[in-house]
Amino acid sequence: MTQNPLESRASDSGAGGGASAWTEAQLRSAWTAAVGDHPGWVDLLAQAWQVRHRAYAPYSGFAVGASLLTAGDLIFSGVNVENASYPVGCCAERSAVCAAVTAGQRQFRTIAIVTDAEHPAAPCGLCRQNLAEFGLDLQVVLGNTTGLVWHAPLRELLPAAFTPDSFEPRPGRQ
Ligand SMILES: [Zn+2]
Image (tube, rainbow, N blue to C red):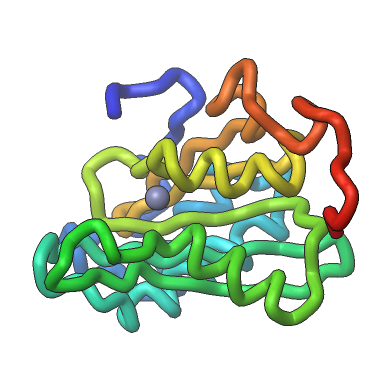
């Protein structure tokens, strides 16, 4: 992912430290400086950061945490779960969606995704499509472990999306 003008870093927040050894408080400080007008996003990023250590990523070594905020202010989190048969693995974003839908939730406001990538990593195409099923107004907030944040609504990440509105309802759809 290339540098994006919407990306911001709290470069003078005093939150320095090692590239991968920031404390939650330091990260919260950096994220707050970056998205101060959206304090709820910082909590969601922190949730994703906290769950990220549970990622099962022995093949890529790329741990991802995702936290999904519902319309009713519930949070469901997920991590990437890789597999020896590579395509069988599941991304953190879809893990979070599956957890939320399993709990009866289908309306989502925001998803926060945290990785240790140099620039906050955006959802893969498969996950963008998965998220689009539940609404293109979803805010996607990407953070990394050195305090960078980038955000955009899902409709900007998946233009001309194929959604449930793309075809006529069929009997049996729920
Ligand atoms: Zn994905």
